[in-house]
Length: 275
Image (cartoon, rainbow, N blue to C red; front, top):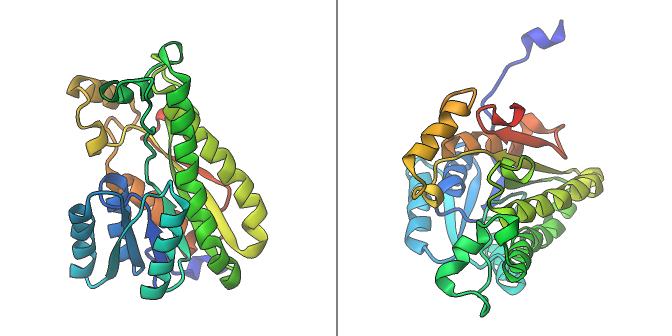
C-alpha cells in the first residue's frame, strides 16, 4: 500500500513568515520559539514589554533562526497596519498569523481601576455591562485588525494560516460561573473564525482555533496551588498544561502537515473537555 512508504517529518515552517501577537510571554513566547525552531521567520509582537520580546527573539536567533520584535497595541487599527507593514518590509509578507494577544478591558470611570480585573473575572450575577462590553470588543479587535491587515498578502499568494488561541472555558462553563466576560469574548472570536474559514478556504487560507485548558503561564501564576492541583487531579492526564503543549498544537496546525485542516477546534486540556 502506498502509505507504508510515506516518510513522516517534523512539522516544517521553512520559508514561512509568521506573526505571533502577544508573543513576548507564556503561550505566545513558546509558540514563537517553536515556529522559529521549525524554520519560520518570526515577528514577535509585544505591547509594553520590549525586553521580554527581545529575549524571545534572541532564543530564536541563538538556534539559527530569524526573528524580529515588533510593538503594537493590536486593538488599534493604525498600530496593527504599521506593524504588518514593518514586518513585510523586514521579513516579507506574512503567511502565518497566530492570534494570541489577550484583550484587557478599557478603563471605566464606573469601576475603580483596582477592581476592574475582579470585574472581568466575575460571574454573571456580579458582572458589569461596561466591563463585558469593552472586554468583548477588545478581544474582537485583537483578532479582527491583525487578520484584516495580513489578508491582502495571503490572498495574493493564495495561501495562509490563521490560528486563534482560545480557552475551553468559552465552550465548557465551570460550576462557579466565573470569567463570563472572558468566555463571551473568546466565544465571539471563535464564531468569527468559523465564518472566516468558510469564506477564505477557496483562497487556500486555513483558519483554526486551539482551545487551552489550565495552562500554567504567568497570567495564572497567582492562582492558589491547591486549585491547580485539584484541576490536575480531575484531568485525565493528571497534570496541568504547559505553554509548550499549546505551542506544539499551534505549530502542527500552522504547518503543511495540516494542509487539509481548516475550521477546526483543537482542545489542548489533558482530556478535560470530554468530562
